[in-house]
Length: 439
Ligand SMILES: O=P(O)(O)O[C@@H]1[C@@H](OP(=O)(O)O)[C@H](OP(=O)(O)O)[C@H](O)[C@H](OP(=O)(O)O)[C@H]1OP(=O)(O)O
Ligand SMILES: Nc1ncnc2c1ncn2[C@@H]1O[C@H](COP(=O)(O)OP(=O)(O)OP(=O)(O)O)[C@@H](O)[C@H]1O
Image 1 (spheres, rainbow, N blue to C red):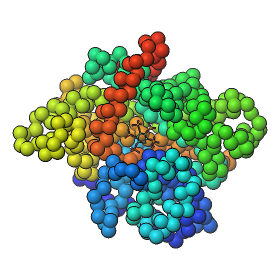
Image 2 (image 1 turned 60 degrees about the horizontal axis):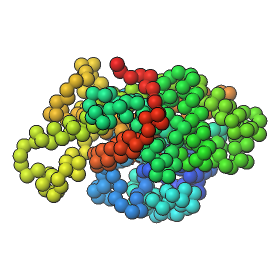
Image 3 (image 1 turned 180 degrees about the vertical axis):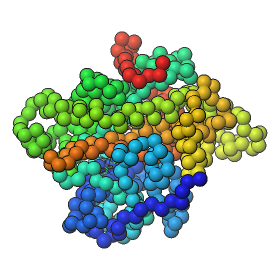
Image 4 (image 1 turned 90 degrees about the horizontal axis):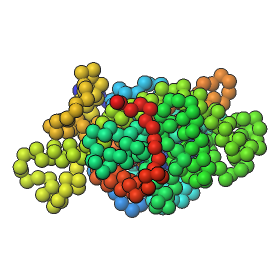
């Protein structure tokens, strides 16, 4: 059983003022603010990660029904401690502390920081002022020096074992992220179309260099709006069109301010390449993504169907919900004791890949699939030293628990990605090479 859980707690954030915090950035679920107030050992060098709430619909939240008065700690904290920490060396993880929040302070905080948020995000969601708990984290951007954030996405090609004859030639040639970028472009959306994660995960100099070039080019072409690459300098996110800001960063970092874009890209790549090649973090993330998702979405859906068909013929959830497809009904969210037992099995030396998974073991494979999704969506933060005494810091962030409520969405997205890519002519299809493919 998991140990009794007592997460460490942050000092009272309501003793700070909203203006002591500076907006850093945000993702789909949370927004992050760096402490920049008066010197205070309880907050210096830390950031606050706050949950957001959709302006339009209920989010795929794992604990939406908890009464407000006994809101649990953010599940990410226990998930990192009991699950992620069993798979990731500690040097790659950041400390997470519970930050107690108070409604009036949250309201003032959200109102103060709203103008700093990107318009598209403001339209979609808001800081959830009803939350009583946030997370205080080590600030990887800070006020000095510069940091790079890479969201690598999916670093592997699926095993062909469970693919349909129609999708097999497509999915084993072009990686999911490159196909997803194509889908986004076909819808007129921004995408990192010059970047292939299989290059980044390859571990070979030429290919990693190509991946960093691709990230830079997409960052540049998208006006810095892609989420696969973010560059921070002096606590602010750099934007390629802000020439003055770019020149200041270049001056401080590379000793000369004025560079042609290609020259700046080369300097950026030269700084990042040895770090990317020298860390074992990417290989570990890629290996976890791959081993936890060993049947692809298609094999997983088939296993799920078979598991449902084996259930006793009582009034099924499907009938109760009036639904005709299992895709519309969810299994319960795994509990922490279940996660604990999963990770024991997964890390056990006796666990071997089975060629034909038993549908009776579906709960295990469901957890594996959810955990794979966490690693497919995480980001790598690289904090460059701001003086010769410091070392480069490489951390993995955004290791949230994924919800079973996303299964249907993942199924639909997978189908759509392949369907749209199947319309690309054979000659125009990208060939992505998986350096770590299990043969
Ligand atoms: O499905 P994907 O691959 O597009 O990933 C989603 C991300 O889109 P991306 O492709 O990285 O731009 C998406 O990122 P953005 O909101 O687009 O920055 C989220 O990370 C989302 O996770 P969650 O809903 O916040 O838990 C991610 O959803 P999950 O698939 O991880 O559930
Ligand atoms: N420890 C940190 N220090 C500095 N900045 C951070 C830190 N953690 C996160 N950030 C910034 O805040 C952003 C949002 O955080 P995070 O990725 O955890 O949110 P999310 O909503 O779960 O993202 P996603 O939608 O990608 O799942 C990150 O992309 C990064 O730019």
